[in-house]
Image (cartoon, rainbow, N blue to C red; front, side, top):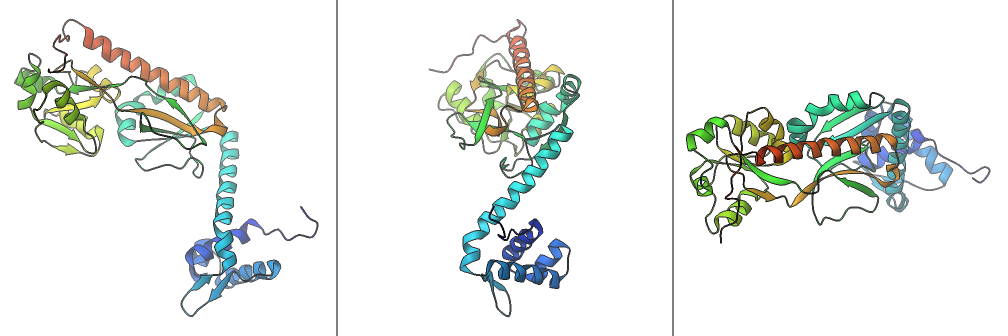
Length: 321
């Protein structure tokens, strides 16, 4: 750093960023919880010390000058990085691990196992956030994100990833009462008369029917935007759902659901555990990734062993010709 060079404070940079983003002194003052004269003073101080004009004033708003157009994005990125560094330092001190997952993944599989992670890693303070929105690991205070990702998807260069399961399949599920009512299991063609439970934004039923029933089109039925709702509906005797093995395993174990047919279909995407590459050597990330992979593998082993038992075996698991 050059001696005598002006270095603005973080609060001055935050003030510049807020005024530029909101294009208003009063709005920036409200956001920063300070007075309008204070905001005006900070902006004028920056302009005087840098010998530039940051905004042009009109009767209604503030307009960016060329200088602000050139530097705003870099200032905002710098403030975000400072916030992330501060958060990471606190997380290291507290040994917190923030994990983002989808609501259906959390509700149907992960939450029931969190106590096991706590027992084996009591030193890690796990924080779980359930959301379907995109999470920017570089800008948000999130250490890991578990997301469904197409097999051939390209990841950003700064992201590392661990595959949760390498060979997950889709299975058919319904309640024991529904299976008995429809006498499911003898012939896959019986599925054409069943009520099908749909998960929006997926083509699971179309793919399944195309593979096993040729040109026969699947019937329409109730459609849900969350995998957990498909499971709840199936448990409630509403029809047959097509689900990932991992999301169905607990309801199958508890006897709430059964597999009316043993036919399966490969998944075209995988759950990836995503993290920033620069955090790949973090002990807490390594421990969580290994734990969740081991738990997922155990779940899949149970599903496949259960389906292979004589009482559940269906030797008609072959595609139509």
